[in-house]
Length: 149
Image (cartoon, rainbow, N blue to C red; front, side, top):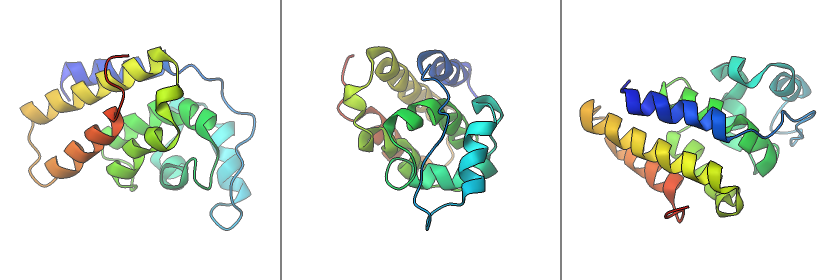
């Protein structure tokens, strides 16, 4: 991983300081109470892909809301970049748009743009031919409409 991408991932944790939710609600047909409890019982930085795979796919739509998502975002981004999530990266990186990211604090929007740039730099240096299309789509979704915060 290139240094600029590692720095951008670190920026996500620094910018997204939303407190850990005490509870995350979800559709009973989409998740179990054990899965929801694990999301709040384990510190964000220690959540594994197993903890977050289902959440990554269903965040905001049927599990939790934008505030919950903003708490989990840094870890979701890190796991997605590391290729550890089973959720499509386009889904994960499209969630901020679904969560009305243009209404989020400027520091968070700026961090997301930094991440988009870091991913671009990474792709320019370490081309992963079978993944370039999905990464470009993911970056486009992540930076959609943000402009210059």
